[in-house]
Image (cartoon, rainbow, N blue to C red; front, side, top):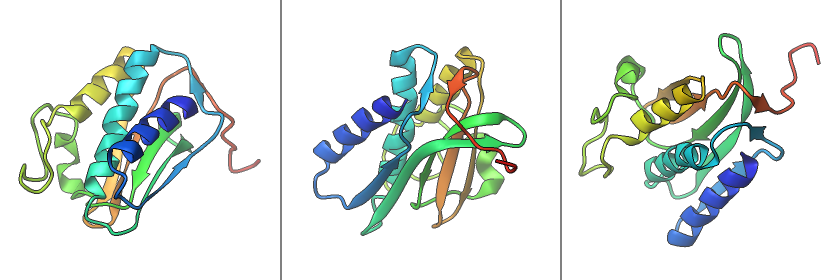
Length: 154
């Protein structure tokens, strides 16, 4: 997963050399799954992070793992971009349900629905947290996640 995230990030940097985005990718992240489908997850999540930070002069995007109290080990993609209003979080993963206007941030409205389908196909789940103008974090689980994620006791 770390290598896939790095590939996708390199493509975003190469295609947008004018952007000042600090990218942080946790090393050693792995999961067992269809590599093409998992790449699609990262293309959509990193692509969204890239897109929704486009109005920031200096943006930050990070990819890593966390232990969620409800879902267990999970991957995340975090950005400090446009964010979203939490009252609309149920619309995020529905195809063609956009929280931002096409003129504000272009897109088809199917990326997050695709992420959800891929995660569920692997037996996992997806959820998000965000705040308007303070960024967003998208989480996803793949049951066969191989990463050391310390518990509070460790």
